[in-house]
Image 1: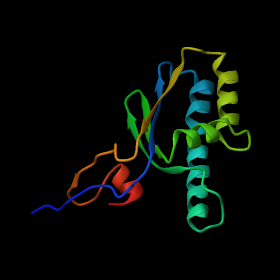
Image 2: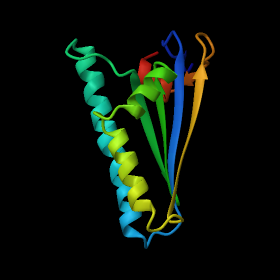
Image 3: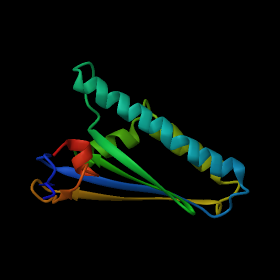
Image 4: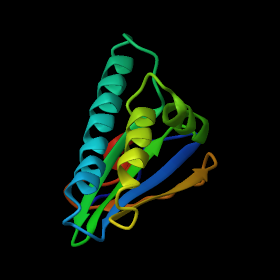
Length: 147
């Protein structure tokens, strides 16, 4: 029989979806800038998460993420402790997001139809997340927070 598991996270949760759709791949400057920005942010967030777990830094509230690549772009799912944490990270001038965002808007003026950057934010109240994992390894929130 296959063991069924659920995530072990308890508390408020913010699920953040962010994506990039490429419409004009020949617009190398805009496409390249948009593609290069996210990995720097994820490195920063993962480093902070590890340092916070060791007690060496205050957590930014980022719990983890997973990326998918599709024919016309990418989609990333991120899990955060709260919407306030997500917004604080996004607005902080001393973290990677704000400078990347400002730079994107400068570069995108040259080809405003080259890419679409989109995001959706979902606030989940404690007890409002449900998950089932049946098989060899958990995915999503179970992989981020444990089962």
